[in-house]
Length: 477
Ligand code: DUC
Ligand code: ZN
Ligand code: ZN
Image 1 (cartoon, rainbow, N blue to C red):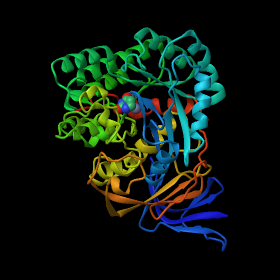
Image 2: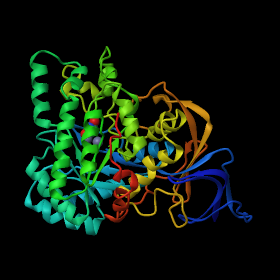
Image 3: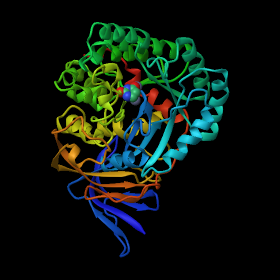
Image 4: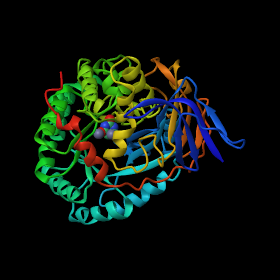
């Protein structure tokens, strides 16, 4: 059976035009001003609506152990929420147990991911250094299509690696064309600040913000970029939250470092005042890096406008408020770090970005779909083009909705954006040609998602050498 999406306004990173889209099997086979249906064809009328390439969220933590607990969404509930929210592919993080091989870990996480309702890839976290890591990296890259790893500069004892370890790992990754995601915060100094705050009797969630200052994110960001430069390796700084850290990225791009930056909706829309609420409400907003002073939001939007920030990822890391966040009721350092966001990232970026005039429709597609596919080497996704996967999101720009945990698919008892009204309603979502969201309701099956065996290098290089990147001039503030 063929499917035709008729009369929609097709939006890609490069253009916006009215067209019909013909889908056969998994793929887009024709894009034309008027495709005549045959009687057996399934028709989706998208008159008055936008048709976007499916969102690609390259920053998720489903089924992810952290701080003696595990995130509240598994690959079923998390990817279902993603689909309803316009995300048709994710890249989740693995997490090796101490001493475990990276290959065995990858196998274990591919197995976990098989429940997914949308396509999923995996970034391999490396949370301790050994010579074996360097031996396993080529196997991960070549046999498992793992084009990206992740290193942490914080979470000492659980995940943090030191500078020399980073250098050795990034050097090897760079030789293989594998990009390194980096969580950039100075873990040593943050741990000291936390100990000091607790010793002074300061236990409320707001101290999470005070003990992880912007300068410690900027310092680690600059150091990571310098190590990448010395190792001649591509680097992707996850969740840039503040102006000082973004400045480090811009400086590095100017020097020619193969650097990309990501920010997240929580840093674009929420601010540090959310941590400072009575009755432990602030605990809901504990994530790392922490929410920042509001003025940083304009700088981050500017980074997206100018291409200095290439991607918006959700950093979906959900913990229930009533029992998981509550672990830190008397001690902010025990609050599991993370916010839910996978279900709403597409809407929030559309509303605050496109609807409120901060970015264009085409920039929106670039940030939420095209750039993630290019940077992380996802073949046949991130665009609406013949031969590409029919991963498509149809959005009615004339409708609006109020975000609330009462109607969410995320398996968590709150929503960080509760009560926000956003313009634009996602009506239909297709994943490889199959309608998995119809009239806003999920109708797909668990287990239909496929593991993304990723390419390395080629698409990312074309993006790195784009005119925008080459112009990394005084673009912030
Ligand atoms: N930050 C979070 O808030 N959660 C997961 C880990 C991280 O880096
Ligand atoms: Zn992180
Ligand atoms: Zn994260």
